[in-house]
Length: 398
Ligand SMILES: Nc1ncnc2c1ncn2[C@@H]1O[C@H](COP(=O)(O)OP(=O)(O)O)[C@@H](O)[C@H]1O
Ligand SMILES: [Mg+2]
Image 1 (spheres, protein in one colour):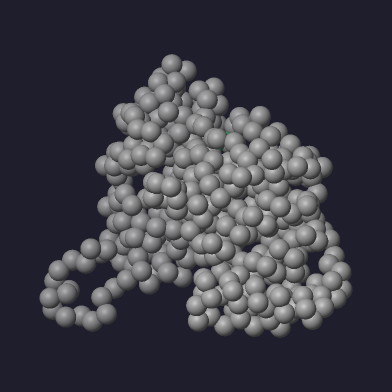
Image 2 (tube, rainbow, N blue to C red; image 1 turned 180 degrees about the vertical axis):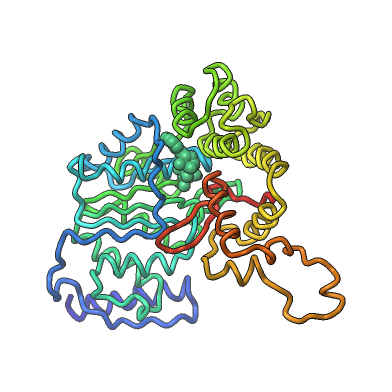
């Protein structure tokens, strides 16, 4: 780029700064990618909070094929799976991801970001920029968010990327009205506009809310699928796969009551296995009646039934855990869940601490309890990060 181009760029950056980031410093110290050594492909996938594989995955065949079609269709740049929490969006994408090789899909690079557990724009941009620049750029040295997005844009043009943005609703506006579904941060809107206009690759999104910022591109370079609950035959397969026993009629009744909601059916299977040897007849009698946006209320009814059977220590554990809402690492366990009072005043020791049952638990019992809740599918465990996180519904329940 000549001097004139450079000046223009600086002016553009400054204009952006003035409008959106009054007071922020902008340093333009980078080199143009074209002046550097070419990038090498393919690069090893960069996966952040990836959804684990579902061993009992059922159905969704047509959708999996549609996603492959999006990838191979030269017109499509962004594909979105849109649907209520817990219907199975992330599970589908993970299943599709696991078949990339056998489907002969070989992107130059794969980047997966789970927003459900990390909804910080800057951390996301840093990781993406580091990845697409193959370490040539140290994102932390760039102060402006706008500049980071610009730099990502430059690099993204150089390869065929598969970029997965999982749980993007965390970054979208959720209040009903004209703005519903728009990105909260303008920089993110701009980034989506880059992605939808790149010459190659696919950005695959899962979200609860429609992507209003992409309306203009709909049915051209932007495609979407609305995700609905599991069908009755698929739900049957799933329950049986999870070890639930009973007649088809009894199972069908439960599936209908829960409207085929994947997340609820998985946890009900865990509940039945744990307390009733998998007997479907013992499924809590809860009828899902509400529409998509209020379904969490139905799910809460189910969770309250679970709570009736839970041990006191599990209940306290989940109560503390739901204060965190998203993720807690193993290191926090002792410090938070089994926290003892700092000083031993008479009044303190006489009164029972609310987390007394947890404080008294041995490390081993504590771990067993966590494993039990993971099997039940009320919480999940991330082996690589050694952390527990909650399932895809905002659990402010216990
Ligand atoms: N097709 C499926 N087969 C089996 N289990 C599924 C399926 N879809 C979803 N599930 C299970 O349901 C739960 C919620 O699914 P998830 O993909 O996390 O929902 P979402 O991303 O839409 O919030 C997970 O435990 C998942 O494993
Ligand atoms: Mg999800």
